[in-house]
Every structure is written in C-alpha cells, then in structure tokens.
Length: 226
Length: 222
Image (cartoon, rainbow over the protein chains, first blue to last red):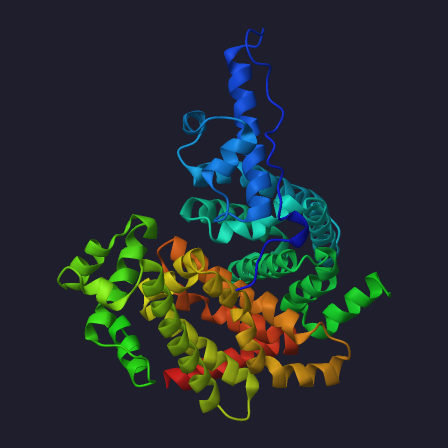
C-alpha cells in the first residue's frame, strides 16, 4: 500500500502553535477559550492535512495546539467532531464562492463555467483544505460524511439548468455530477495534480448531460479556442 | 441475492470459506450497518452469528481482516454480476450499459449491509480498500469504450475516457455512499434511469440515451 501522504508534507512541525502568555494576563475567559479552540482547529487541520485522518493521533493534535487532552475534551466530544469543526467551514467557503459565481441572468452554460472555474480556483488555493474536504472526509466517520454530503448538496444548484423542474431525473443527475466532481478532485488531490486542469472535462460532462456532446464541445471551443 | 448467497457463490470461486466464516462476515456487516465499527467487538459478532465464543479468532486475526474479506467477496460478486449483464446484451453498447447498471444497482440494493461495508467501512479500516474504491469507478470504462470510440469519430476531440468515466461512475459511487449514510440503499434502483441517461448523454446525447433506457426497460418489463 502506497504512502498516501504528500511527500512535501510528511513532517508537520512538532512545535506547538503560538500560545497565549502564561501566568497573570488581562485576557477574559472567553478570549482564552476562543484562543484554545482556534488553536485546536488549526492543529487538526495541519496534522490531518499532512498525516491523514487515521494517522493523526490525539497526542499529535493536542501537542500541536499546545493544550492538554482535558482541554481538548472541554471543546470537542471526540476527534471526529473536532475534524468536522475544522473542515466544514472551509468546505462551506469553497461552495459559497462557487454559488456566488454561478449567480446571474446569463445563459446556464456560462454560469456553470464560471462556477466550476471559481470552485477549482478556490480548491487550488487551499491545498490543505482540499485534502481535508475531498480526501479525509471519506474515511473519518459518519459525522464527517454527513457534513460532506451537506456541503456537496448545496453545490447541486449549479448543475440544475433553468428547465430542471420539468425533468424528473434532473435532481439525481445533478447529485451524480457533484459526486463525480468530488471524486475527480479527490483523485487529483491525492496525486498532487493541478485541479484547475479539470475544468474542460467537468464542463463537458455538465453541458453534455443537457445538450449532448456535440453542443457541449462547441460551446467549450467557442468560450476558449485554446 | 442475499449476503449468504454472496459468500456461498464465492466458495465456488475457490475462496476458502466455511459456513461459520460466512456467518461471521455477514454478522460483521450487519453490526457495522447499525453502529460504528470501532464499537463492535468479537463477542458481539459471534453472538450475532449465533456462534460460540472463540469462533471469530479461529477464522480472523482481527475485525479489520474480517471486513476486508467480506469487502473482497462482495465486490467480486458485484462486478461479476455487472459484467455478466453487460455481456448478455450484444451489439448495442448503450443498452448493454443500461443493463449492466441495472444489474449493478440491483445487486447493491439487495445487500445493503454489505454495500455499506464496501463503500463506507472498508475504506475506513483498510488502505487497500481505500485505494481500490478510488479506482473502482474506472471499472465502468470498458462498458463505455465502444461508445467512446464512436463519439470520437463523430465529434472529434473528447475528454479522456478515464476522466469521463471517473466523473460519471465516481458520481455513482458517491451516490451510493449517500444512500448508505441515509440508510436508503434498498431504494437505490430509483437512480437507475438518471445514471443510465447521464452515462449515455456524455457520448450520444440525452435524447438517444433516454431512448436506449426506454427500449431496455420495455424489453426487461416484457
């Protein structure tokens, strides 16, 4: 079995993240709690992003966050709950920018192209988040899987053309295309390939599902002759 | 098809197994469907299988090993049933693909606990299962190859077959995950029309794909 951890990322810093001053300080209890929580979330993001979910022990996470196990459990029920708190906001942010790009009154093919391009740019810009959202969510457990499904479900909107209500298969088709997108992104993230190169392929699949391969190829060619 | 039948059929393929072993794997799949596999212990598996204490250890070194064996047997049978359905329809790749998908989804829906074990639990416990699941969608590439060759001739440059397959079949795998999480695996055949038309649309367009689906359904239901 190959080592699935990116070669460039196999040695996360063993140093704890910057912490609050020890001893007497003027911080409120809320500020301390918030600092602890954000350090834990940052720590699990880095440790899971570099070692994989199952390779990330609680000791690794608490060590990186510079907190005790007891403090960890004051914030999160378990590792999976902490993982969900780390990846879901990043996943939501990626989906949000895609949905924002999709908005508009121009033709559906143009909106799909814009949404997919924006989505892939966002994934490319956050490699750690990409690994958490598209790779590690599949094996972390039921809470993570449910949160992943929730985010992907929001993305289905871009695959629903204006006349989708008239097609009883439209919703399932959108669901499958979103799942397929997640699947190819997953493969590219694992292979450390540039996800932005997937754009014409994802666009072709989306457009041909509604317009057929000939029209899809023509639209893609017209939009980007290169 | 029942989980028991899967393992019995598997025995005819040279898989070294006996009835106790089958029962342990089925019990493991059933329990993993009900709760997180980390919460399952060997005593519970033996009790669910109706076998005396110590039986599990006689057959498997660990829960993980039991899961991986059940995963292997389940996937092998699923793919065999799918390939057989494809081969039965000769000369028309669109209808053959529709038939293969129907066989695949029928198999998957008949054994929800094993489907859940293959799609959700296996990748959690085994790197090999995880890697296999990553590549599993490409299994369908062979079904689409004849249509892909025709489409290339007709339309010129197409995205690579592997990428098209990964997007469509990977989407199917993700859909199965979703039915597993929602505990609705027995209902997954309801997606047959949509996935068939999507697979066909990419190569021949939605109208021709829908026509192939309707022709297949008429023949099957007759």
